Length: 330
Image 1 (cartoon, rainbow, N blue to C red):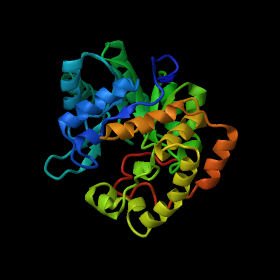
Image 2 (spheres, rainbow, N blue to C red):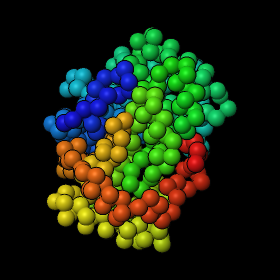
Image 3 (tube, one colour):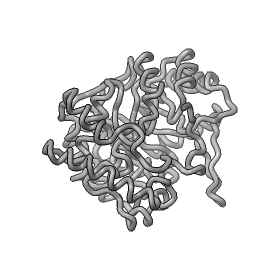
Image 4 (cartoon, rainbow, N blue to C red):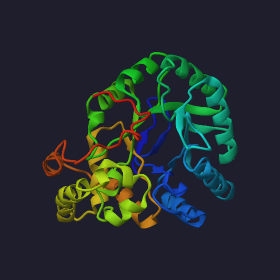
C-alpha cells in the first residue's frame, strides 16, 4: 500500500483510509462481527487510517472500534470528529464549536475508543457564528495537552481553511470529492496544496454510483439518507445510472472494477488527496484498495473525464436539510 502524509508535519498513512460511518447502520444494518471482519481485512490490505465520528450512531461506531482495539491492539491511525449536537427527542441537529463542548466531546470519544490520544480530531461541522480562529486555538490546546496529534475541519470553505491556518497548521480538511462531486477543485484542492493540508475525500465512489453495483430504486428507498437525496430519487437516479454505465464500461475495458478506477482517478488528481471510502463488505474494500495500485496516464485521465465530464450528475449532492452545516463556497 502506498502512503501519503496526513498534513505537512503529520504521520504517513495508507494512501486510502477506511470510513467507519457504515458500521453504524447509516446505509443499512451492520453487525459487530461484520465490522471486526472489515477491520481485519483493512489491516491485511495495508490500510492503517480509520476515520469515525461521535455522530455515527450516536457514538456506536466509536464503541465498536474501541472493542476491536481492545482485542487487537493499537493497529490504526485514528481520526474522529465532534461539533454536532442532536436533540434526543426530535433528532434536530445544531452545531457547537465551543471549547467546553469540544473538550467534553473529545474526552467522551477517547473513552469510547479506549485510547488516551487520537491522531486526528476534526470539527465535524463549523458553527457559523463562532470565529474559526477561536476554534483553531481550542484545537491547538488539545494538541498541546497531548490528547490529539493534529486537527482538521470537515466541509469548510477555502477561505475558512486559510483563516484557520493563519493561527495554526491544519493537518486535514475532509470534504466530499469524487468524479461526481468536483466542487473542491474550485479552490479547496488548491488551498490544501498551498498550505500542506491533506484533503481527506469521503464518498469517493459517489455513494455507490461509481461502482459495479450501484444502488437501484429498491436499495435507495431502503436508506433513510439516499431516499431523500436528490441524486437517488427519480428521475435523477435513472439518469445517473445511465451516465455511470459509460464509466463502468471504461473500467471494464481497463480490466478494473469501477470502484478501483474511481479511487485511482482521485489519487492521480492531487497528491494531497487521501480517499476514505466506506463499506461493510470486505470484498468491496479490496476493490477500493486496488485503486491505490493503479497508475493512470494522462491519456487515461482524459478518457475518464470525457466519459464523466464535470457536471454530469443529475441532482444536487444534498437536499436543503442535508445542506445544513457544510459551507458553500462556489
